[in-house]
Structure formats: structure tokens, C-alpha cells
Amino acid sequence: MAGERILIIEDEVKIARFLELELSHEGYQVELVHDGRKGLEAAMGNAVDLIILDVMLPSLSGMEVLRRLRQSAQTPVIMLTAKNDVTDIVMGLDIGADDYMVKPFAIEELLARIRTALKRSKLLAAAPDVIDLGSLKIDLGQHAVHYGDDLIDLTKKEYDLLKYLAENRNMVLSREKILENVWGYNYFGDTNVVDVYIRYLRIKIDDRYNIKFIHTVRGVGYVLKHE
Ligand code: CA
Image 1: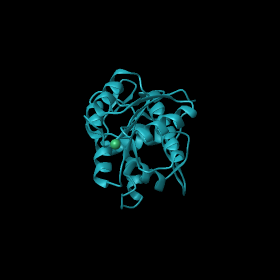
Image 2: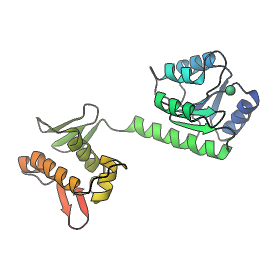
Image 3: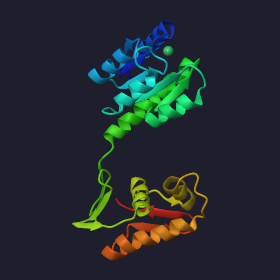
């Protein structure tokens, strides 16, 4: 699985050299740059699979590198911050960093985060644009749902719920699990809202087209069935 290209933008030579050795040892192809401007050039110019980006850099700060990079590329970025500076971390994540490490860090942890970030970006790249359930098609790019030639008019929540059921088709999902994934961890309502929205979807899809996609599993939750 290794062989991915990792760009390290880090001005502290000792740390940079250490990272280069460790990552090469793991089988990654490593490129090393010591200042922000050259780092941005390297990030834009070459095919890079992941970037390790120090925040405090000469010529162009890590934040500025990230900001400019994100205008055109979604290459995964793991930020390195010198101290536990929450403002830096929040700003970096807002601008589009995928993850961060606070120095000093254990190399094993950085390696684990690199693996996670690479895996996530591969999944994103490989993710289909359309979930195909026969006559029912969910266009993830357009946020549109079609049944045959009909465009089904769904609210944002109905769409999110249908998408979640479809992504986990043939799996029984509890109301709690649906609530957590579609409404979020911070949703304080009760699980009845799931039943209400399932009913909306059934009216708009199952009942309207006289099909049975969404099945109730008594006492447990729901499953969208599609072979
Ligand atoms: Ca630095």
C-alpha cells in the first residue's frame, strides 16, 4: 500500500530530516521543502498524495500555504503546530486541514494519522457519484433523487435520511443510529423524529411508486432493502 508521495514542508531541519527518514522507512516517497513559498510550489506543481505542513514557516506561513492550496486542490494536509495553540488548530481545520499534530509528537501517532488521511482520501476519490438502486437513483453530486424519469422533491433532511439508508442498504439500522448519523450527535430530540421522516419518505417514494424499499424491523428500526 505504501509508495504514496508525501511532501514535508518544515523549516526545522532536524525535525524535517527525522520525518524524511521515518517516512522513507515506511515506504513512502518523500519530498522535503524548508519554506512556505517553495512548499506551495511543490504542493501545486507535483502530484502529491499527502502534505505534512508546519504552521510556523519562513516566507509564507503554513496557514497561507494551506489557504492558497485549498483554492484548487484537496490534497490531504496534516498540520504541525509548535505549541498547543487552539487558535491555530481551529483556524487550520477551518481552512481545510484534515488533521493536526502538536509538537513534540510520537512518530507512531503521526504514521497512524497519515494512514487514516490517505485511506480517507482514496475512499473519497473512489466514491461513486450515484447510488444506483434500480429505478431509484441518488445523485450525490447534484443532491437529486430520481425514480425512473421523475425527479423526487425531497427536503434536505429527507434526502440525508434516504442517502444514509441507501449507503447502508440491507443493513438494519436502529432509530438511535439513524438519529446519530443523520441528525448528528448533538441532536437532543427523541427518536420519534426518525419515524416521522421515514413516513415522509414512504409517502414520496414507496407509496407513490407502489414499491417497498423501506422496511420496518419491529422493535429495532429500519432497513432499505435492495438486492
Ligand atoms: Ca517551523
